[in-house]
Image 1 (tube, rainbow, N blue to C red):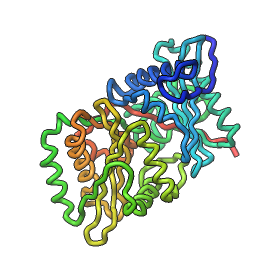
Image 2 (image 1 turned 120 degrees about the horizontal axis):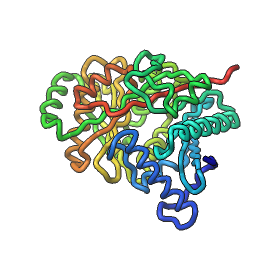
Image 3 (image 1 turned 180 degrees about the horizontal axis):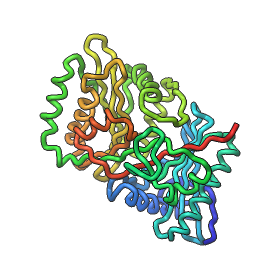
Length: 358
């Protein structure tokens, strides 16, 4: 196999004629096939418009996407995200290897893609690489968090093990089928009755101006309160411009944010929030962020907000019949909420970390 790794050139629009448009459409088909193999059919689907929007530059991070070719065959991809506002010594990467390759070819390609990621990190002065690969509930290697594992011989993981990466964290990918939850309204009523000191505030799209100061604080707390294991993520600082840009990016390509927040009646303080990303089309919504800050825990707010969003989803977009979510395997309180809300695991993702010697 003759591997040629080069940057992807983005077209102006999905239907553009010429080499950039042809490569984009090939990459979109590859991405959809890769997602189906990793998560299951229909669980992580992007229209060409959504896919192109997800590759656009923004103010929060730089995205580099490299395509690996064997002649005219697209056989592999690695996508690198380099934060621009915080954690600026970290680059995050995810490889996608063609399942049409033999095991030996996959190992060869993974080694080449990992080497290229390290070259780019060094050129950019980034001393930490976080690589996302296939994970497992249990494996020959256990995450340093103590929850979840991975197969060190898997083609995506093998070059990381050789370089001395540590398996720091494993994410559980879970799905809730709304058809399996006929008692959603009763569950929501019970959750609301269990939190009488709180009321729910809801909106669609970007955060209304009156709630932006509170949501900025909540997103900052996401960077400290959510479990990250030993991953080298720094505490984040959010101003209004960052919040607006983040919500613009998440909703690019025709997607919509559905948000619910829990407001304490006595103080007016927002104690937590939960968001869904509604796609332009398809049948699956994506659970995005959910947080209950430490002073407001113990009232069942996570369950209340997630159930409220599921009920709203059923009413607003009945064609979206399922929700997919990612959670750290050691985040047992949130996983317990998910399981009680009808989510079941379908896949796992491993987070490996390498740090340059100083």
